[in-house]
Length: 307
Image 1 (cartoon, one colour):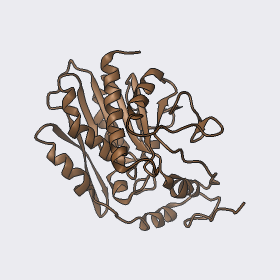
Image 2 (cartoon, helix red, strand yellow):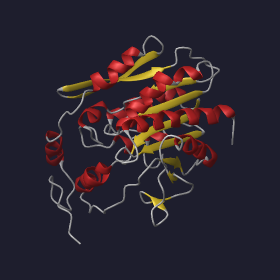
Image 3 (tube, helix red, strand yellow):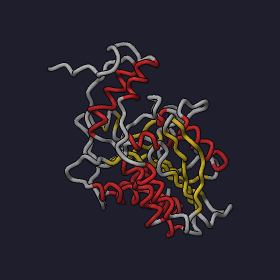
Image 4 (tube, one colour):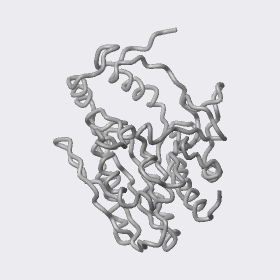
């Protein structure tokens, strides 16, 4: 078997110092615009929803305001739903699926739930189509006290007053071919570890909370998304990305222990979506639609009071 080429930054087996992180950052180039792709869409929604500027991120010379979209008819007697996207900036349908949900479906829930949607948590990474922020930190391992990621800390501060009122939290992600070609090798290099080859699943799947799995809820979301795009199958070991498949298209993680976004509330119903945009069987349109459908299914399940 041919040995994989060493990652171009750092010395194999040695964790990165600030010098390697600076070199890594110097190699990241801006490929798209947060202002054009995301903020401009949010601006069109201001006539129908409240928009909250909940934080400011600065990686000189780049600066970004962080925005969340909020129900205009907010009522303290209604359950709250949190939708998050773009924790990993390169996971495009997480961002645009969240915006699509607000544009096309949020009005259906007016007077039934309070919606809080943070569509692009990591704008620097969105622009550079990367997983990490500018400090080579993964925001989705950083939702914890004294977070090393400003993006994660800002979202936690936004959500804190509502933490025990949120009934549904759905966090929108993708699993891409670049996970295997770039991001896992970069992670191993950064941490001075050996990169073990993995397998990218073809299709949509969910990551539930192993401490609060809610299997019927997860299956309701899977059923809705299956009408739009295909569901990932288990590999020969009965797993998806190294975790046991507990039901069709569902694996579980200890989300709080890992510092994942899905663990920031006390919501009864939580899940992380994973769309596969590189599949020859799925288009960008399907990926965005699948994310929006997952959000709708999650809310519908909670409103139905099903167990």
